[in-house]
Image (cartoon, rainbow, N blue to C red; front, side, top):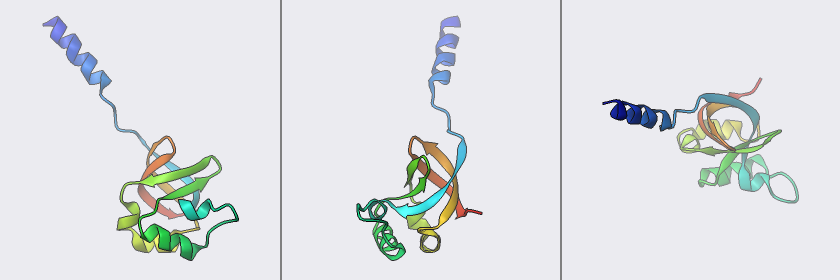
Length: 107
């Protein structure tokens, strides 16, 4: 019985926990347009590319966090309003990716 309990406790501790939500602030960009070598892409260009499903992200002082999940697909109006603007996003951060839960203009 003790062996079974020890194995059960060890297995439970080994399960990955849900990452806590964090907040980041930066500029909402379409990653390809934002990284062109001759300068920044325009908001219209970024919106076109993002609407086609190209990756979007939030450029911060630490680098660009790629947005994962379906935020862009389910928030088209917000995307159009916020692209190239400073935003504050909350969500689960894993390395340089964020699964956005909320996004709003930064103050």
